[in-house]
Length: 130
Image 1: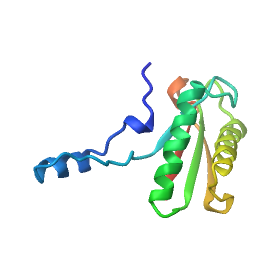
Image 2 (image 1 turned 180 degrees about the vertical axis):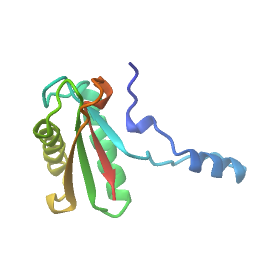
Image 3 (image 1 turned 90 degrees about the vertical axis):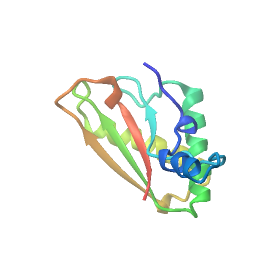
Image 4 (image 1 turned 90 degrees about the horizontal axis):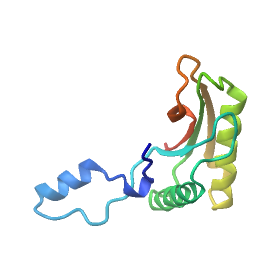
């Protein structure tokens, strides 16, 4: 499974806009949502380095977007099926973002459980600018 940092996700709109204007789109911000993947049944992340880079990329975007509110959505799949685990994953990400200077008052948390499909791609947290 290939996992790409938000750093490598490019806004198609900005790229097309640059092409239409006859220029390259040089300073394209990474677009969200940003994803953090977790191991089965836990709040331990896969790819520690990638997770840190993704969090830093998100904070950089957040600062450039004039400090918009942030929504963190935790997910668990059918094998885990636990709203508590989904919420714990989202809380872990919130703690990381607060440590990177995002005020907790701007962060909301949601938890979703997907009980129909056991799929490792669902074991994640989404970080979204509102």
